[in-house]
Length: 242
Image 1 (cartoon, rainbow, N blue to C red):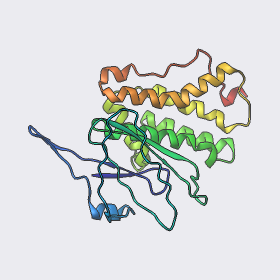
Image 2 (image 1 turned 135 degrees about the vertical axis):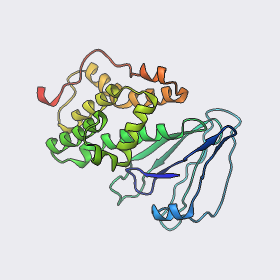
Image 3 (image 1 turned 180 degrees about the horizontal axis):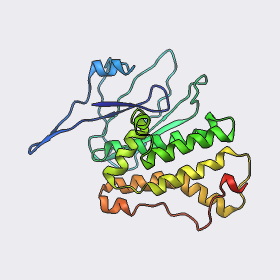
């Protein structure tokens, strides 16, 4: 079992390590010591099961106050669900940011990593007061996807796992690189040149992860190689053109 942190403090991804044979597989889903070492509350107060008769069912929106915290470990054993965690702590550096993951019985990990990557890149403007540090941060992600900076990337929980997902599922890095390129626009206080540029920006920054999610739901490598978000034909202006 692996515990992967996310940009939002207190939110972690639990990945099962399957031990497979001709009967199926065995995996540890909970380990008190590992949870404690990762800074997660290992105390289990309740264990609940929910079942939905219809697809698209909306379940509880839980608002937690500091004096009544509750740690949740959510897993989907059949079908698929979308789980969203919003940081409502006003003193948190990730206040009002969210983590959205699709939990399914089949594709567990890959989707979590893509969303974590998207959030990491989208926070570049927030973490950089000037364009240059932001450009350096985005270039680091380009190098990570391109195979550079091996030691440093291997130590980064999101970057190292994302690179593994790209290889495992045959995802073309080009679409992810275009997402990074589009985010460079966030670093400059300039309006979009046209509606077409805005549509392309939206497609590259929002549609790309959703398109990847759809592809990975089926998981065929041949289909993944064809994955690419559909965007308008114009190009997003680069910082060098400003």
